[in-house]
Image 1 (spheres, helix red, strand yellow):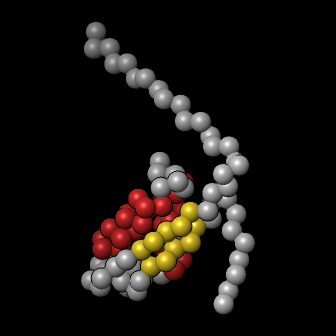
Image 2: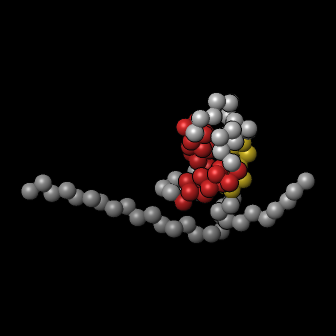
Image 3: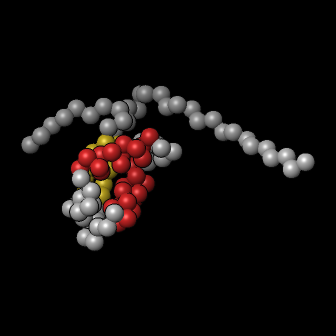
Length: 92
């Protein structure tokens, strides 16, 4: 039995060996970290898991795959507000 204290922004990746057929645990961790910092954000672990499976397929995995990612978020922590920008294209 292992235990750890998760903090805001941490992830737990539960995946079968098919995901790790062509990826090391370090590569999986880096992939999840990078995807969480992208436009997906840490609040979309389901999309990150789907992209991880796609990436493993791209890297050549032929085994069956399943993946569950748990994102630890502090509900008391304020989220950064995303601002919408309007882009105006003037053809004249």
